[in-house]
Amino acid sequence: MAREKDASTFARLVRQRYSRRRFVQASVVLGSVVVTGGISARAVPALSRHVFEEVPRGVDETHHVSPGYLADVLIRWGDPMFADSPQFSPRHQTEAAQLRQFGYNNDFIGFLPLAGLPDGTTRGLLCVNHEYPSSRHMFPRGLFDRLSQDRREQSAVELAAQGGSVFEVQRRNGRWRVHASSPFNRRLSALHSPMRLSGPAAGHERLRTSADPTGQRASGTFANCAGGMTPWGTWLSSEENFQDGFIGAVPDDHPEARNHAMYRIGADPYSWGTHFAQFNVALEPRAPNHFGWVVEIDPMDPASVPVKRTALGRFAHEGAEAVVARDGRVVVYMGDDLIFQYVYKFVSRERLNAGNAAARGNILDTGTLYVARFDVSGVVDWLPLEYGTGPLTPANAFHDQADVLLETRRAAKLMGATPMDRPEGIRVCPDTGVVYLMLTNNAWREVADAANPRAPNPSGHILTITEDRGGHSGLRGQWDVLVRCGDPMDVAAQAHWHPATATSGWFGCPDNCVFDSAGRLWVASDGNTGADGLWGVETRGDAKGLAKAFFRAPVGAEVTGPCFTPDDETLFLSVQHPGALPDGDFDTPVTRWPDFDAALPPRPSVLAITRRGGGRIGT
Ligand code: FEO
Ligand code: CA
Ligand code: CA
Ligand code: CA
Image (tube, rainbow, N blue to C red; front, side, top):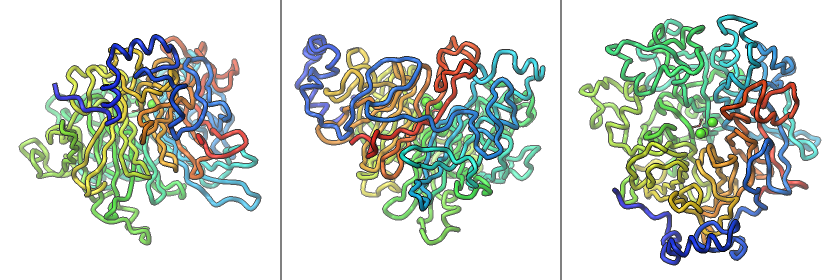
């Protein structure tokens, strides 16, 4: 087994100071206050830059935020997006209604400030992803048996509930409200949002379908999970688990058979392909090639055609963090969220020219996609995925760059990339330029390696990447482990946190993350023991690795899309799939969050969290 890389110099010191035996004894003596290393949280000064009172551990039917903060429900599944939106009526839901209402399972959130109003009202646009539907929680039992024997309308609702929402929000007298009649408001969905494919794979014969003989047009987007906002004000929406949308299979000798197998196409939890040919691989073998991309959307122009940027590769896209490198080129850091998949970055060929909107428009179409190899020595090398380089040749059935991009996973594997424990959120610290990578978990890992140091790894970890002098556009950096997540009281779990982390502060399964303008890291979880939540995790100084619980989700929910306004006074947060436990459904849910109305099911919602009396969050 490869040597395990230490979390930090601090971690080494802690290990030297506290033997495992002493650690266990100290934990028992000090009970719930202590987590690791035998140091009482009360005994350690408040070193973390995250200054707030923690939310206690636990799980119940509602959410909890740190005392002194308000968590207002801003918008819920089914809420009106337009002046003419029909009222939410979950027992009579239709595709037409859903296309005018906020979608299901809100995930990524981006905020674009707009000029304020003369009366002091603050304004902005929110860009929100809708990841996947939950038929069981969205529809009362038997609803679509009554409407339609073949459940076509149910499929249409589910496809309309995915994609994204752009809408104006206004803050007046301290409270945020949705401005439903704003001309900026827009719904994106799977079937009714024409999009363009651009970059090296656009127009390739492997993208041509019956509905799109050009190979350059898609019907829309779905499975939109995380993403990012670009420095030029566009929204990158990541198509993640697109494979779940398709039914059927192609013969083993079909040209797309290997591609579909690599992406696990045909799993079919939804049966959309029964009613819509584009989701039936037997009828449209190339249709899955329209999905698994990063979609770029201009939120300021509701009439603009979103663009799928094929140069950024095709996989289960999660984070898409766009930064400008020192040399002026645009770099997009990305993760492929599946066990044993990879970490990527795209580097544009052109430099970002702030004065040239036309150049900005296509900057993500030309450049190089790299995949990460994490070496035992602590070096990370970025390997180019370029047709003709190394094994990416006709000998391995790559005949052009489109082949490399359509089968990014296979190309990355052949290049020798490091298989990771589910790369999800990835963000760059605005102060230091260090890249933070959330690795959610991998219960199936049997052999640990340097960058994935536990086997199995049910609780995940956080890696850092510090690029060498080449900066973000360079080919080499240094990696390290910030924390190994999980319960530090469970010695077998080998979790590692700062010893002052309290019982409420540790967590498992880091997923999305964000930096506030002060350069402080906040991490959302998906799969934590008990309830998921949002944690402040210190990244520097004596408190490095100290985590504190700021928000706790209702039962069954995960927390996604944390997003600060530029003044750090508001934190927008997605609560996704509330009540999603095996034994709950629309009729008998385990929670009716957030309405607690007997007529309504649980509803995924966006919260606006502010400080009582105003001020920056966490200070
Ligand atoms: Fe949709 Fe990887 O979370
Ligand atoms: Ca999710
Ligand atoms: Ca996620
Ligand atoms: Ca997740």
